[in-house]
Image (cartoon, rainbow, N blue to C red; front, side, top):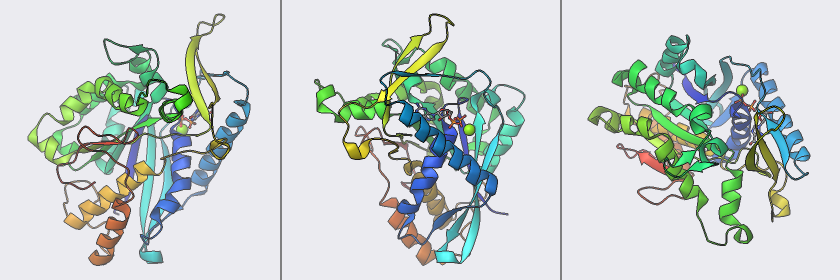
Length: 350
Ligand SMILES: Nc1nc2c(ncn2[C@@H]2O[C@H](COP(=O)(O)OP(=O)(O)O)[C@@H](O)[C@H]2O)c(=O)[nH]1
Ligand SMILES: [Mg+2]
C-alpha cells in the first residue's frame, strides 16, 4: 500500500521524540485551510508523544533554577521506533498511512545497515536531526564546528553511509532535511538586544556551521547531475522546547563526563516562558509540500509517491499544495531567515 514515510536519523537521546511530539502538536494549525489533517493512529504513538511532552514540561519547571545540569544517560534505548499516523485528505474522504521512524546514528555503521537501507527505500523524506549545542558550542575556528559535533552528531558516519551504502537510485527523488534541534540559545541571543551587543546573527552562523559540519555529505549530494536534479535539500531549525536555553558544557570533576548546563532564557517575555516550542511544524510542512508536489508532477521515482494522492481531485490537491507552500519559512541563495535555507531545489518545489 502507498504510504508516506519519514525517516529521522539522529544521536541517541538527542531529543528526536520530543521534537516529533512538538511537531505533531503544531501541525494542526499549519494544515488549516488545506483540507488535510494529521491523526494519531496508534495508542503506542499517542502515549509516547504524550510522555515526551510531559517530560520536557517537567524539565522546564526544573530549569527555573539557573544552570541546571543535564547528563546524557548511560543506557539509552537504541531501538528503531515507528510512530504511526494517518493523513486525512479532502476533509475526511480518504486517509493515507503516514509513518515516522526514528533510528540512532549508530545504526549507520553497525549490523543494522541493511535495515536502514530498507527504511530509506520506503521513505520519501529523510530528516537528519542535529543536536545544535554539540554542533555549535566550543567552536573550533579552524574547522567551523564544535568539538563534540563529530562524536555525537556522527556526520562522517552519515556521509559514508550515503556514499557507500546507498546507490544514486536509492536517493533519487528524496527530500533531505537538516533539522538543527535545541536552537533556543542561538535564537534568543540573536533576537535579544541586551545579549547581542555586536548584532550577531547566530542563526546564520548556524547555517555556516552546518556547511562545515556536514561538508562531506553536502558535497556528495551535489556531486553528480542525477543527485542535483533529484535530491532536494533544506535546513529547518527548531526550538524544541522554547523556554530553556542551553548555556554551556562542562566536564564533571568527579566523573569526567560532559554535562550540559541549561537555564531559563534571559530577558524573556512572559508569553514565551515555559513550554513554547517554535518552528516545529516546519519540517512537516516541508515534507508534505514536497510529497504533494511530486504527486502533482506524477514523478514516480521516489518510493510510494506515485498514486499517493490518486483519490484526490488534482485541482483540490494543487490548491492544498499552494496553501501549504505559502506557510513554508525559508531563505534562498545567501539569504537565510532564522537559519532556514533551501540548499538544493532543482525542481523548484519549495
Ligand atoms: N534541556 C533539554 N532537554 C531536552 C530537549 N529535548 C529533549 N530533551 C530531553 O532529553 C531526553 C531525551 O529526549 P528524547 O526526545 O526521548 O530523545 P530521543 O532518544 O532522541 O528520542 C528527555 O529527557 C527529554 O526531556 C531540549 O530541547 N532541551
Ligand atoms: Mg526517541
